[in-house]
Amino acid sequence: MMDKKSIIKKSAYILIPIIILFILFALDHQIRDFVKTNIKSAEWETFVQTLNKFGDGGVQAVIAIILMLAGYLKKNGRLLRTGKFGLFAIILAGIIVPRPTMTDTGASNLGPSITIGFDSFPSGHTASSFALAAILSSVYPKGRYIFYSLAGIASLSRIYLDSHFASDVFAGAVIGAWIGWLAYKRGKWQAT
Picture 1 (cartoon, rainbow, N blue to C red):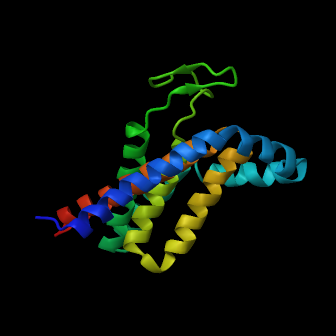
Picture 2 (spheres, rainbow, N blue to C red):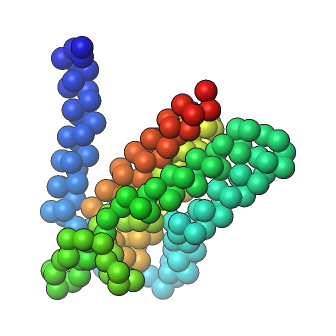
């Protein structure tokens, strides 16, 4: 039986992200306008495009496969499992994350989009970035600041490139971190 303090703590883990998400929904257009007006510049464009590639599921899958191969070749079970669970989390983040179509006209489609370039909520780049960061941070906790910083930078590039609203990125980060944590827990359980 859970005590009152434990219930409040677990409820906060759910309610706080939901409250933040609703605040971001309200501020999405203001954040977008601020970035377009005050931050966006030609000098940053190439740099941000490069950072954005780290959020691509294909690039992340290659990283996970390299970890698996290195683990296999070096006979390092921890590295091998990290690559496997990372790949699992990236794939799971891509399957679980539904993406309603959001356009500037305000139209939306509550279902997966088959039209490339119109996906918005939540950010798949962000979900897969945070899923991989969660796996890597769970296995290599000393690197967690680096892993989450890279995921955060790749995610912020989605706002800069006007591919996502801030709420899309936040939701992707929460979902991705949760998927990565679950994949790690599942893998840890299977390894024991």
